[in-house]
Each structure stands twice: as C-alpha cells, then as structure tokens.
Image (cartoon, rainbow, N blue to C red; front, side):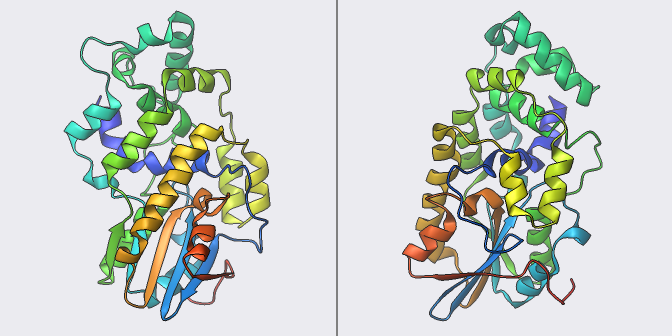
Length: 292
C-alpha cells in the first residue's frame, strides 16, 4: 500500500474540495473570488476559501500574501503530515482477512480496478483489494487531477509553510484522525458503488480554471447538490466544531483562515456562524497590488 501511504495525506483536502464545494443553499456571490474579512472589536480575521489541489504558489491570489503578512497567525483545516503509518492503516486499509473485491462484488470490482489502473498504472489488484472504501473513493476522486506525481503541496499547506517561514504560527482546526473519521463515515461501500455509477469525467481542469478566475457561480453550476447526510457530516458538523474552537485559536489582533471554499456556503457556513458570534463580514477583492 505504498501508493496510499506516500500520497494520500497530502491529497485528503484535494478530493474534499471536489466534494465539499457543492452546497445546497449557497449565499449569492458578492463578487468574484473567495476571500472575506471578519471584524469583531479589535480582532480582524481574513477568510480564504481554498482549492486544496491544482493551485501553484504563483497562482495564489496576491491578497493572500498581503493579508498573511499582516496576520499574527494562520489557521488551516488539519496537518496532513501528522498522519502516522498506524493511523493510515486503521482508516485506509481493511482489517486482515477482509477483501474489497468481496465487498463490492465482481462487476463493481472490475470497474474499480480498471479506473484506478488507468490513472495509477503501478497500482496492483492486491493493493486495491486491501483498500478501505474511503481509500478507494479518494483515489477515484483524485484520479483526474493527479495523473502525474509531480503535484506540489496543497494551497493550504503552501500558505501554512509560508507563514512558518515568516515566523508566524500555523494552527489547525481538527486533527488528521478527526478528518479521517469523517471520511470513513461518509465513504461506505454504497457510496463507492455510486461513484462507480457516476464517474467524475474530465471536470477537474474546468473546476480549476473557474476557481483561479474567482468565478463562484461557475463552480456552483459544475457541482451537483450534495446528499444531506454527506453535507451534514462533512460540512455542518465540522463548521460548528471549528466555530466552538475559534476563540481559543485566534491571534491577538489579526488571523488568516484558509480552508476549503465549501465551508463558506450553506445555512451553517463559517460566514453565518461567525456573524452569529458578533463578527461583521465583508467581501474583499480577489486581486491586490501586493506580492509574496
């Protein structure tokens, strides 16, 4: 399972973005871009909706670096590098004696193997047979975006690493184990079968293009509505938990929060939850004059 162990921690956010950007009741876009300012008293919070994969450092909007420079600290979703081999094995491999082929049945098993080997030619059938449904789903969802192995770190990681290089703290909203547990609850055998019935196609490049253009409306058009249970687990519950931890994580004056763009849409979005906690929200321009 070397393929999963070496790559998946850096890709969790990637396929979460593809899923989580869909929101049943997103607020109307106020301007092109995914950046807001939240103020409460002396506290200033810059909120960046990220695309976890497919955005190089030189493609990150200039306003991110401008706001990062002014911030005391940065908050991201999780530290993927904190994943240990034992933790990954618990969530990404089936227990000894269990078989993904047996769980899926011959027809769906053959479809899964064909799709994964097309994108990951070195992956073996034995490796796939040991995968948990969540691990297999992750590989399917990143296949179109990850044909090559030269993908750089996620946008979130790039922001976090830049913050550290500038002597700023980079904190997390949830542990990698918490994130893996959410994914395990969502991506069951039934969900994996549904993915096989509705393959992603070649949408990633169009999704990437729309994101870099700051085109919220286009992104929302491209993603189908999320099933309510999935939205509840992957968005609503996490947003509420993050908000409950927010005050203890904020810097003394300015903080930059960089999390998946979907967390800013829906009835329990971070924008709505922060407004309920006394923050005043305003959108910021996707472009700015400052540079990294």
